[in-house]
Amino acid sequence: MRVLILTPQFPYPPHQGTSIRNCNLIRQLAVRHEIHLLSFIEGPGRVEVAPLRAHCAAICAMAVPRRSRLDRARGTLLSPLPDMALRLESKAMHQQLDELLHRTCYDVIQIEGLEMGPYLLQISNLTWSAALSRSRLPSGRGRKARGASKPPIPNGHRPLLVFDDHNSEYMLQRRAFETDVRQRERWIGALYSLIQWKKLARYERRCCQAADRVTVVSEVDRRALEGLVPGMEATVVSNGVDIAAYDPQAVEHIDLGSAAILFTGKMDFRPNVDGVLWFARQVLPLVLAEMPKAHFYIVGQRPHRRLRALRGRAAVTVTGFVPHIQPYIAGAAAYVVPLRMGGGTRLKILEAMALGKAVVSTSLGCEGFPLMRAGEHLLVADDAVAFAQAVVALLSDPSRRQALGRAARDLVTRWYDWAVIAPRLEAVYSTLRMTRFG
Image 1 (cartoon, one colour):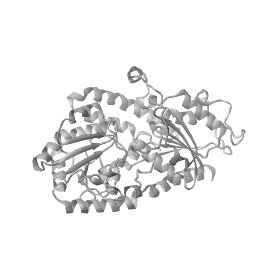
Image 2 (spheres, helix red, strand yellow):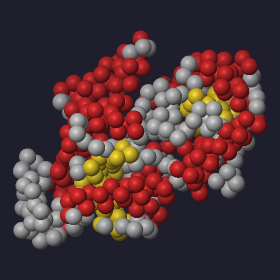
Image 3 (cartoon, helix red, strand yellow):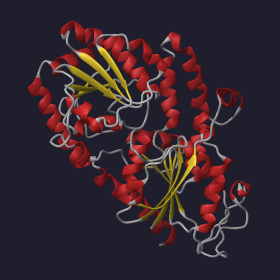
Image 4 (cartoon, one colour):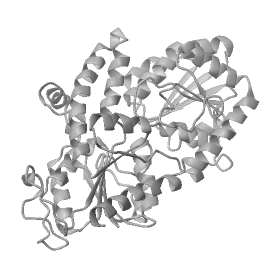
């Protein structure tokens, strides 16, 4: 099939969750399908597209629209739409998409994430006519066609519209509100999440209803969205890991010390910031009381200003951006996922397991991976004392770390390699096609 994929971030280099998922799905789908990419890109700098050129028949990248703090505040207070619906709203992108749809005939159009909702709705609201040629749409163009009726066209060629909702976003903001409201100093964050939660529920429902099929990354997200849109059946296409790129025998490691504790992630992402601050303030002192040589490494790009308070602590290192995270994971004694808010699934836990690392996670941190069993593949703890005890237990017992790491790598190799996951998405395409065309 000819597949057009719209992404909110350029999928290369794959340095964070969204780009990792999109890059690997494109790489796998391109084996059997013709992939066209339309994406936003940060900044005017040179785009590293060479690896993607081998997988994409066409690539078009548009600059991310700029919004001031005033624009964002105005949208939060006055717009009925959530912040995510406004973040990537771009007249230039609407026009570019419209031109592509008039020029090229696609079998599938896949929208990656709720931030791309405006373009999902643009496509959904077009009027498709069987009387037009295979490569054309009706004369009503792009945004002007919004609100037009969509009569059933049994012999026409309307693309299959797939919405890959990376997180149940309304659920993520509800959880953020519930976490922040318990912290009196975070009342501004709690208020923001409360407002966004209500707006997101309406907008996410609308986007799900506009698509032919919705895919999600976990059963938890599936249930959340199906509860939001009664009668809808979402399909789980889980997150994965490139097993070959995380081979413990091939990856060089940085010697971080025998008691190194590691967290990796995009460090301006609110759940990550909350998680590492909780660990550093509530858990790490308990670990240090038992293991004075323990050291906590926070590895990831764009450290939020809230993390500045950690930079002066002797037992904490905030690295900022690193070109490759594998050497850090390989060099750590234990990997932690101390998340208390969020949705979807965490690619970071799959990366650590693929490298054979022993993991300690909260229940929410490993949510969405039903095959992971506490005590067999990782340790799970939700309060500071229990989390610290689990970390100390691993730091003081190398044989247990190795056993957990082996079991974890075996699990992700069998079930979470991208080569195993991509066929589940292809099955969605095939099912939709059979349903529509017989």
